[in-house]
Length: 317
Image (cartoon, rainbow, N blue to C red; front, side, top):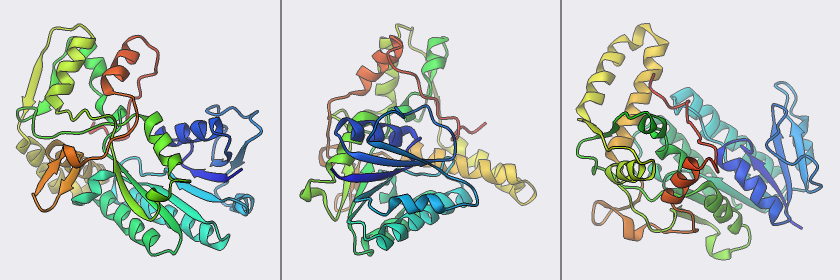
């Protein structure tokens, strides 16, 4: 039985990686700073380590781990947060993996690093390079988009508010992947030699969607009269300019300026594979996996079969 260590095990994807790993009878080790009710603590294949601010002795329990899986990511994407989490913490994990002669390191990255403009993207790329040069067997996974990132307007839609998009609602496309399908894909990298020492972009079942498509889907599923509100992307430039003027005098303004920059990126760049030769995003070249579709997820939210995940860390207000 392989023993795996999952970093970021209480996060959106990490929780599901742990659950799927236990279902597949892996021996799983996780570390957390708080008492967690996210896992079945009675599962004999699960070891939960308590992290203390000033005590790193928990790493002693990793000596016989076969595979490191890192699902950690900065919450806000702010430069300091990104450097500490996306690069520094991952590098500490990599050094530990090398120290104990662990055979494999699987990294959950992001597809948006193909065209880096943001602080967290450069930090992710810096660690990807460290991992590639580490000598370890690695898999770098770059998912397209998560269901949670496309669910932020559901509550507004249910209240009769308009669905908001930029431009004509067709500026970008994505092929989102569910947390379950992504978790299974991550775990498949352990044994599948075709996924070793590779960068692996991955999306869900073929369903390339624009913001306008997603809005139409939401109105139909929640049986609400369609209302749309469009904003030009230049409004984000104007907001960021004002925040940058105030940034020398306000940490709040600096942080919000970075969030606006992130918002502009996602409003104008597709979450698909970038074809450099054609200088365009290509849905046909974006690999797919799994069975779960965004439409099925929205129906499950409507029927309260799944809990709606609200990503509050990336809000602009």
